[in-house]
Image 1 (cartoon, protein in one colour):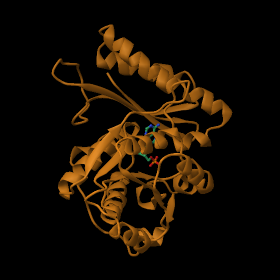
Image 2 (image 1 turned 60 degrees about the vertical axis):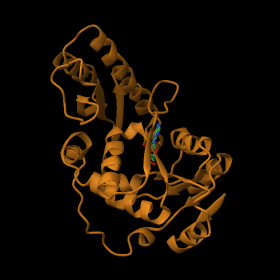
Image 3 (image 1 turned 45 degrees about the vertical axis):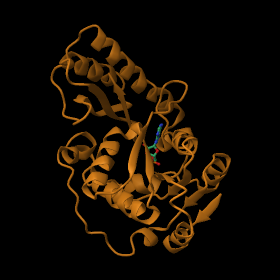
Image 4 (image 1 turned 60 degrees about the horizontal axis):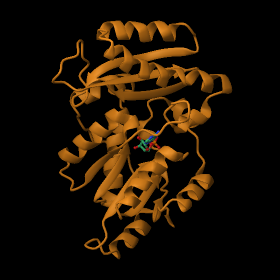
Length: 280
Ligand code: AMP
């Protein structure tokens, strides 16, 4: 696997590359790689694409400075994992390489900016849009793979690609989970043993949502049950739980047959903020 640290090096490599014959599959990450990330690489490799992964902890998408400082950085083991996957090349740029000067561009994603993650992490999607558009410009992939664990992010990236008129197919991939159902996340490594055990309640509750929906409970009743369950232990701090329209992410007050619902949650376990979602 090739390792590139500068824009000019990876661009030189890609310029010599026959893009008519070889299509590029791209997987942007912030590192601390786990099987969730590797599943995206697998999906690209399975499609016969020349597979490029990037590892870059993007400062502009962190609305909490401490979260950025504490974000796990495990480059050596990341590279070992990538070597074992079928990844062809990895791009590991510095902050100066991506942002040689301040990126003052503005993007607007309509309601996606102000709902759920957009509401609770102001500026987060602007930072995501900045870095992803810069990486897309450098790599010029044909396909880019994103995890549905960050469901709202997938919608933002699709909208970004549309707004910038980029010829890139965005491929959403399923959530990879631990044995107890917890969605894999780089942040899981920051949980204490007690917090890690407590975290499994989140996917358990999401499963129950499906069951409650099946039993005909109203959305307001489902929300109440979630709040009650989490309030039983002060280790949890619920940020939001919503049942939304899968395509617009508009929160729903009632379930109707013509709207596909998705449940989304963000909850602190101790100091670690975890997110999850489940299509209902
Ligand atoms: P991150 O390194 O957290 O920015 O994630 C990089 C990519 O991996 C994003 O598209 C994530 O949605 C995806 N990803 C993270 N965790 C998972 C998971 N458990 N299952 C599937 N994809 C994931």
